[in-house]
Image (cartoon, rainbow, N blue to C red):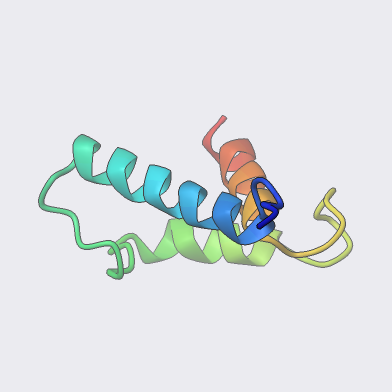
Amino acid sequence: MRTAGVTRLDSIKQAILLFSNSKLSIKPDHRLLEFSGDVESTIVVVRALSATTIPFGQAGLTNLFCLAAQFLK
């Protein structure tokens, strides 16, 4: 039996687990599916997103994390 090594799905699963663990270690009582209560900042970020302004190619979890990291700076 041959193994293909790490697959894209494995990488996505690992990224989701890393995000979940990091988020919960920062704030243990946080619910991961809850939206922020700060509507104004959410509106600003959502309006800033567009297909022409995002410097990444295809949509994907890696690109989502990279975009989130840019907004945190």
